Length: 274
Length: 117
Image 1 (spheres, rainbow over the protein chains, first blue to last red):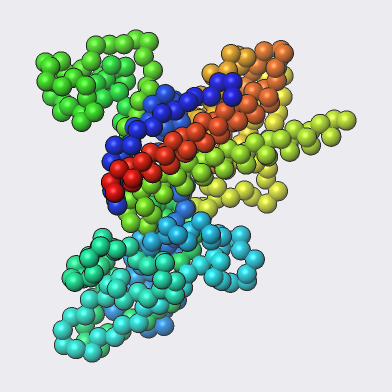
Image 2: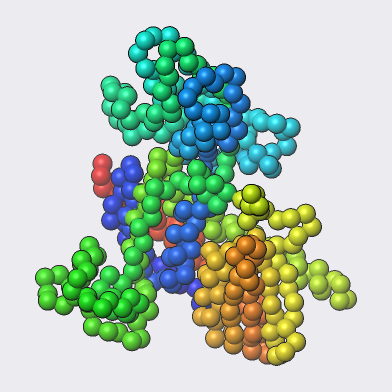
């Protein structure tokens, strides 16, 4: 390991939705690549194929399919074991590459019937729509279920759907994060930002200036971004610590695949020349 | 209307190679690597790591056009070393750095969990 960094990590907060940590002794490029990977390349499950048997609702088919695709599905246990549908050897869909969902609601009362994620039935009990109160209290109130469509008396919605593995680069529905907060140099000692009036700007929570009158730290011309403050907020499909771990694993895999392809390429060149 | 399918940003075309190596003839010991279906996530990280190597005289990357999903990486090294070796070492260093980070994160999560219970 001639010139590798030895990064240090300090975990400040870990809840069901958030993980807050600080990475130090690494480069800005590595921290940024991690941020990009958490958002766009960490795989989750989301509905990607919908077939309608009956739809007499006020929303048209594609509208409902779009909404249902955006519902976050708990992917923690299953997504790593599943294959991408395009790589799977089965002809259409199978248990290894998809999870089947059904929705069958007909409104027969005079009252408006709300079709929510509670009505979306999964064939795999580990992959269900993510709502706030999953393992904690039992569902006393259905306030946290996501509303899909409202039905009037006589309207019906019946559909089949398959959830597939994918990641944010292909479509935002596969993005496991609600947001990734990323900060470095909270007191602007590197002057990467130039404030016309530094006193107007609120102080960062990571600032070391405390109560002093200074609004920015003194200029450090030889400084390099060293400490990065990250807060990964999950949307419910993956636990936040899983987002980070799977993200790092995906980044390592991309690098090692590139290394393998590079060595093949050079071997082929060597064979061609000789 | 003309939007290409979004999976084109990461799936290689038929017969397309992931990485193509060309020798740069203008200066000695230089090569241009074209990496297909990758973006700044890899490009910036690899470039930064290459610049840390004292045997690397030049390292730079660019994405020729944002609608074409590839980047080119130009590396010039000292005569005793080759650009290909520099790239292999840079990638190895990055993988080891990420492995260390992963291990430290797992330990930190475990400690946090034990602390909470």
